[in-house]
Picture 1 (cartoon, rainbow, N blue to C red):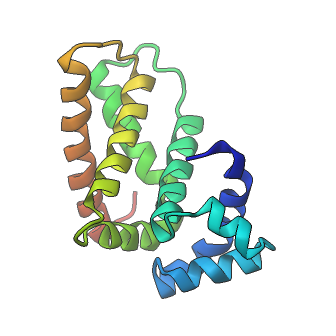
Picture 2: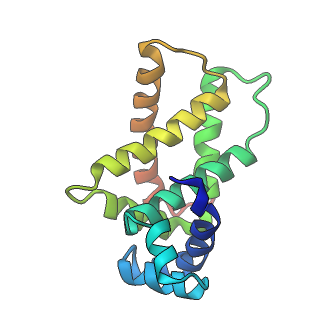
Length: 166
């Protein structure tokens, strides 16, 4: 995403999140959030030229940034423990917006939207591996991220239905 519209995306996402749990990821929610954030229609269209998909991408990027901010330096942890910890932290940063995350997964699962969903989960896996200290530049670089992407997807599906504490 273009950095020129970063502040607009943040403001619109903040205005949209309370509505998404009730109305889902829709063009109407995007328009209302832009209006609530005081963003004119032209700027809103430029910041979210991909529509709702760009709003979901902003939500995912926001979660990734929050995860990285919450993760401490992984000094003495084994690599598998680093990855497990980062996946848990990624879920924890979305805990207040579980319904928005659930609805985003549903929106991304529809035909024609899976490429965006795959790219977003791959980006999260990439952030986790970089934080964990991965320096691979060969095929392992990609295989680690693809495997973790599958783990992230499956873990999220279980998390959506998990109502237990902690």
